[in-house]
Length: 381
Image 1 (tube, rainbow, N blue to C red):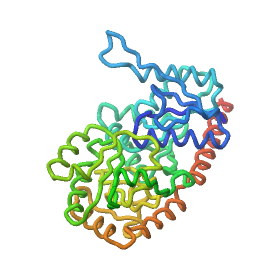
Image 2: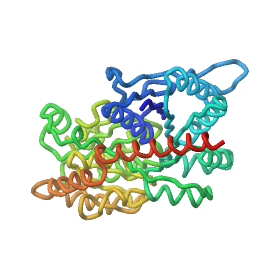
Image 3: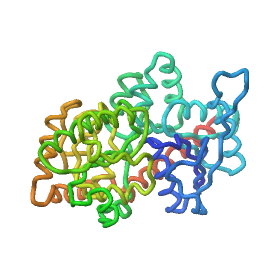
Image 4: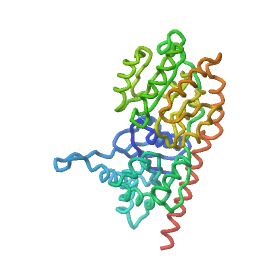
């Protein structure tokens, strides 16, 4: 199959899932064409089955802001036609599903099928903004197929947009063969030279991630034991987090690494992963940590309870409850095995429900189903 994929190429769950999906599909023999304004962060440019097509960000004095939705639609149409694609798969409703809808209309009367995958904030924050809600609803209803990443997000979408059409739940996934626990003596020596426990956080540092809570949790842990906190990512809340670490007197124990590649190698060095978000529609970073045998303390919000079973492979607390989160962290890290037994259960859980080997075939079957329906509808006209 020849598949076009569009998502945000930056750090963030939707872009990571879109890129990892493309790479897994390529590994299964499909030709994958990424269509976006920059190469996706995790894309492997050396895979002969993976191709990148750049949609230009047009700048013109008349425009205060680039009409990216329009230029993306044109690039989608161009690639679909030139590369004889079978289907487009767009991730994040705004603006990608709108661009795909425009491309399909320009391609008429020929058929350009596209699938939209909803990831979370495109529904819970952006999509239900009054300025976008009618267009978001319309693009969902007009998609040839729609998936979302959790049962929670399915409920939110149906409730807030009054969607009547069927939506398939296909969860996020992790390559369980690549995401494993492989201790790296050099990294461990650099981060925790005296063998201190390592707590870790990974995100795009947006306000919804509540990374200041990660700092506060760690500060409470540090009152009880030596430890290190590794913060991976970047975004608007990085400077406030660095300032808070200084204020709490723990700056020397908090490592801000910025944006990083090789995430799987780094996650496997942690003893505990923190995900204190206000809301997560799934919690991909938590799943990746679990696959690396790292227990997770996260918030009991959104789709996270579908990933983490509290008390078994991690703990869930209410958003903002840093004291309870710190209590769980101290308990885990004070154990003789630093929570390794719980981490091993976390990997078993991840392998059982969210391995790429099980989830990617769900996408393949859905592509076939959508294509069959799309071309049957055309033949019936």
